[in-house]
Length: 500
Image: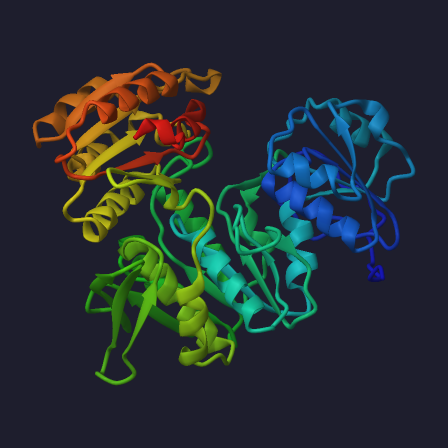
């Protein structure tokens, strides 16, 4: 049954905008077209709207699994390639993807025909959060894992949540779901929304419960400095109602600075330092689980939990989920069980392959803090192994020289480091890029063997050669592939059993 929705009939200009009050909302009933449909977010949105009874079509230039397969099996009418012919006056609404430029011919047709249009963040905020207890997960690190865990936990406890997770999760049937329960959970990204609204997606997600996992400088392509990022988070906190709750990790100075500067709101803090209300500390590794202790300021209310997720940063993500569950009236005992069952999101410390001599992980880590935390977590979990890291500087921040010094410190915990050369882009004009040969020299001074390769294929060939040449008595190798992109297919080259 299609839900009745109201829609503003006004056409909203595709010029840069600062006033968001008149954006069109969902039609009822109607036909919706999505430009850039094969992304994780847009594809999941298209399928969810189709499942709700809307007539949905979508177009994209390139289609990749798993989303391509999901779309083919859905009720979405998919067009391969962009064409103005896909846009007709009969459309009730067009959703424009954030990677789609203004020059796109379908966008031009939308403007010429003055068809009501919107973007993912605006529409997702409406269909997932309106009329529900809204939980928004934000921060430089940990958004996807924390959102996935909370969504999974609520689903397991039969709360039928609405949710959006910005990644694939094997324990969830889809990354976006419109549930009938009273809770909506959404990953609040600080990246901008669409070409004509250069503001963070999270500003379109009204939070009743807001998690701030971390604030650090990132997204150098859209933010000039850390202060600009902090200002956007300040505006996000200003949207939390007086009856709401902010759950914030005080391990990060910008978070502490933000909390001290905002108007009085209800705040719960967590972290690894004494100033946090809920302080996390590592206890032990046992089998597939890492155990953590939580102590409360004042001495009462402490607890312990076990998780299959690696590292203290993930421990903080799990702790944040406990604090959200408490706000939703869920007991720690109930939440402990679902947290222990959760296996994580795809490409977030995802185990790809294991033999007696080799363990291969894939991780999304690309920011130097995430890299450092990942390596520390690996050493904590596998103290007797050799730790090899293959790293692709692919994001707009990691490719630039912004964190040259920080990366030097981040990789020191690795035994061997294999770096892929930076691929230049048109947007790099006038930008200093990460100097990998300088990084190679700096990490070598601290005992890390480091080699630089032109691409992932050559790294893969070298790794296969090195692994095959190892003696049977050599320590087990834990090899972690770090990238927020494809890394030239390197993970697939390493999961072949013949590599060991």
